[in-house]
Image (cartoon, rainbow, N blue to C red; front, side, top):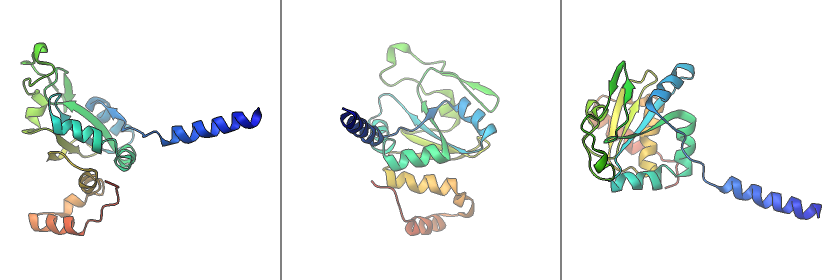
Length: 182
């Protein structure tokens, strides 16, 4: 009987360790508060409920084990509905969505004031912030795991600070060796 219990526990342990981890999403306010205790950059996924590429990004990229592990270790991750109704406090100002219509909660709605402030013009957009919650750069469009890896590492290592033009970025891009599995 003891052997049977150990086998069941072993199988259960192997099964549970194989379950994919998930990115630990927090609000922007929580990420900024966490930065004060443990400085890390912020990666913010700006999505909408009606956006197909946003759903692909969530399903294919944000559930990739390599992406999950890297983001959880090196970033505070924020999910933000660019057409949602929540009020977000950022840099001493409250941003809302005064034109939000609850009747349109599952379709296109009005852009959130924070999305406008961040100059989001397409979904999905991943916005990277530095350790002081200042915007580094928005990255527009669906990103496969290896494509996102480039930006995650570029900003994490502050390599973007040494790139001053498109030719330098192109050289960085060509030299980059992705390690994430697609």
